[in-house]
Amino acid sequence: MSTMPKTSERKRLSVQGLTHSYGGNNAISDIAFTIEPGEIVALLGPSGCGKSTVLRAIAGLIQPKAGKIELGNQNLATVSARARDIGMVFQNYALFPHLTVAENIAYPLACQHISRAERKLRVREMLELVRLGEYGNRLPRELSGGQQQRVAVARAIAGRPSLLLLDEPLGALDRALRFDLQVELLHLQKSLGITTLIVTHDQEEAQSLANRLVLMNKGNIEQIDTPMAVYDRPKSLFVNTFIGQTNQLPGKVLRFENDTTLIGLADNKTLRLPRRLNFTLGSKVVITFRPEEVILFDLPGENRQPVRLTVSVPLGPVLVHELTLDCGNGLRASQVRGPGTSIPLPGSQLFAEIDTSRCHAFPAEPQP
Image 1 (cartoon, rainbow, N blue to C red):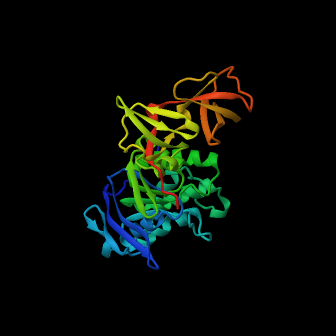
Image 2 (cartoon, rainbow, N blue to C red):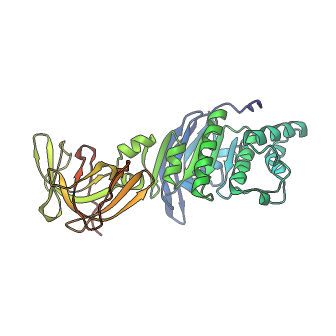
Image 3 (cartoon, helix red, strand yellow):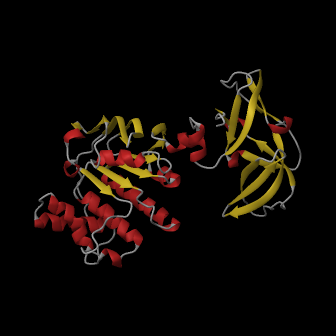
């Protein structure tokens, strides 16, 4: 059993009021979050939301227009990218094609003027840590994508940085390999305890790796929370629709009755929520709920909406039903598939009961 390599002191990353623009257009506005020592945080959002700008500012690749970045007690404003005590894994791994695996890992150590003997020791430690002990003399082109990714991680942590930045680290891998590498990355980070920021647009990758998520949209932060809290208690319609699958029904607040709210839906249908919403009467809202919060029945009942089955798709242990409401809106329901579970025929008339205790209500976005 190899000895776990030592790492630098665990440090806290603090980002305060980060703002930057390109050509007069704001890319990010007043971004603020922290990563506690040894924590993994994922910066998550769609393409163009500003997460790469935040990453580049932390790494020292751009100078933001405003804001402060601190690593431990050090303000990074005047610290060069090379001197920031940060390891970074790029999306395309950025391995030197003419250098061997061992030489790639040793390169940043040579830049730090670490002795040849110490470099040799650390390279051997890193190769063993990422389970590539026999691959030191190979060139990057002789490795699989997953192996190249592990080399990139080994190179990034060989210098024992206080902060590790991962830029879409698994984006170039196929789905099955991504899951295996997610598990490996998680074990590796936990073992070394390096404060880590992952930048990704892949919600599954973020939720599986991170302690907390920082969700960005259009240059702003929408929500900072744990993966489960973001999924169960989204603070905006964007968060609700970006994380996981969700159904949306447009409606209007009709009335409040005994701490319940009656929502008017299309075609004079209604939905009663078991709480008083913080909306005025007549407000247009969007009611959201997850596919797993819909149960299908053969008979009508309260809070059951008549639907027609379009198709049922078996996805391993789950059946996903695509449904159509009478008004034409689509609906999705998921059902755990047990032994002997029958699949209804396309075109079947069913009734969808919604778990109203798990529904969310958001203001309807104004039409352009």
